[in-house]
Image (cartoon, rainbow, N blue to C red; front, side, top):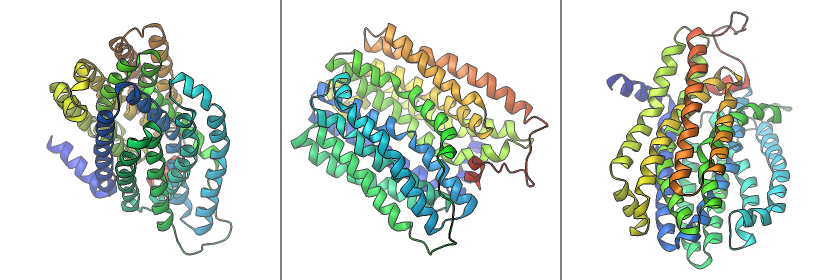
Length: 425
């Protein structure tokens, strides 16, 4: 434990502390938001809101690749006014076609998630554009090592969502809560844009390339789909009350993934740096312990007192979801290990990053066959997790024990100069 504490302290000294604190506050704010909204709404309406919010997050997950690529761009070429302008403009333009597709498909989304109005589904479109540009702006700041500013954008978004979202949910219901979420992202973007004012640099500075985003996007999207598909399918297959209980249980359980995700952002550069070295195996084990420890601790607390957690957050209306919380919290804790191994594959630019996609396909297939109850859906999620984790552990464990092939080219200093490695610079 002392060794692990020392490792985490060094991660904090390297700049992870502001992000970790901001993510912890954001997670607490997210729980508070769901707790208040869950009390204000009936289970059916809350189930609809939870499904759309999860769809919002799912649409935003590929944008994590934008953040990584933008950070790599700045780390390699520096932050200039031209780079900022070209990157944010490109991202805004790239996000318009997907947003139009989402807008055109709003009636289908409304029917699939059993939403009360078309507006509830249509709000996914503007969210996609705002979240895309916000992710790119945060990436530019991270590449310039302005970690404190990025952390502040998370805090501002949390405060705006808690205030405006909860105010609007009373008169406007699901639409009001979603509007508050969109405005919170816009507030974060405005803060990031203010801090991106830099002196003019050399003309012709590079902008973000779409190809640089694709590889990281495959890993990030597959990982999120693997960890969230059960919630979306639960809303589709279960009745209003049952889906509301599942959303409540899943929201509590999956909160244990938030802080490890923040720590993963600090661990990933260490994996990149360690891959060509002799200490790669130890780095992978230490990184796994650093990411998984808070997840296991959080899951243990939830598993020990699930009814108390549900009562404090949602009141007595969801007391029957205690068993679900136990099962989903255990699944979430083990999912952190899949995340570590996926990032390990990403660090060495391996095709192993597609394994979570296969796990998600297996999970969806199982749920499509067995979805008669919330317990069945949770069991299907666990059944898909085990082979996915074992396969990832076998593939990545062997590769990190062996190391890079002799033909791999590494530049002086042992640093991989790929765009992903530039993020670690």
